[in-house]
Amino acid sequence: ATPTSIMVGSGKGAQMGVLFREGKALQQLREVQTVALDKTGTLTKGMPELTDLTTDGDESDVLRLVAALEQSSEHPIAEAIVRAAKERTLSLPDPEDFEAEPGMGVSGTVEGRSVQVGADRYMEQLGYSLDAWADTASTWADAGKTPLFAAVDGRVVAVLAVADTIKDSSPEAIRALHDRGLRVAMITGDNEHTAQAIARELGIDTVIAEVMPDEKVDAIKRLQEDGPVAFVGDGINDAPALAQADVGIAIGTGTDIAIESADIILVSGDVRGVANAYALSTATLRNIK
Ligand code: ADP
Ligand code: MG
Image 1 (cartoon, rainbow, N blue to C red):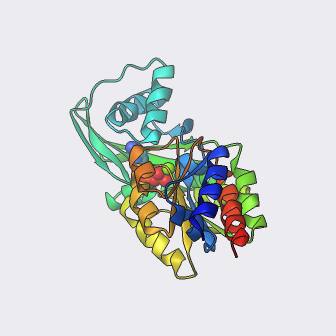
Image 2: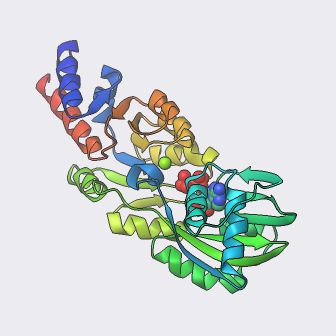
């Protein structure tokens, strides 16, 4: 590609809210066969809400203890639970003790009581049996909600669900990528069934779910076995995957570290920009051949 054609292509991109950090990205994008996208904050709004809570104990008491613990977590799920508790005007004590396990859940002490909240794999790792709650959880997961389990003083007492909203632009963004013959994959730390339900709604081909934060790079490498990959993400956890991908594309409204790790930035966070960038990439290079 000539420097001029790349400059023209980059200029057109900027008009569409797609920033190419280097001309090289414009050239590499046309080679891509798979576009992998992070789920939370990229395809969804990343602002989940607490939608369900089933307990064999007192609902307010369980929500109060769980929310008190989640005050110490910065995860969007934690924020959803804390918000729900505050909306119910529950007053939340500070936990005496708190520990977060990334991609799994949180554990600590509230008012002298031991509290744990997290994914099924987290609770099972802690030695809990979820048999009594599994049916409820799987119904919610199949509806695209994220089930979480809560234990107090060594006993599972509740199952909760949080749900995130798909961005209005996501279905069209996926369709546009398919129209251009690209394979579309979704990578998420979320529950397998939840991820499958959301992928089904969006028409996504490949789902890689229950990926721990430090495993996203491996997920990209696996997709790269079939050809060059573009990865689209927004979070701190996405930075290594953005660097590993042949083309890293960051959501402009995402974290600074994701933006710094990317080759291309979607300024307004509109994922339709990916297909636009791809079209620009193929058109720019066609002109100079
Ligand atoms: P994602 O960014 O896709 O949500 P994460 O790796 O951040 O992936 O989280 C994966 C899963 O770990 C969540 O779906 C949830 O089940 C569990 N988890 C993580 N943090 C928390 C938390 N603060 N409270 C409860 N569960 C959590
Ligand atoms: Mg994200």
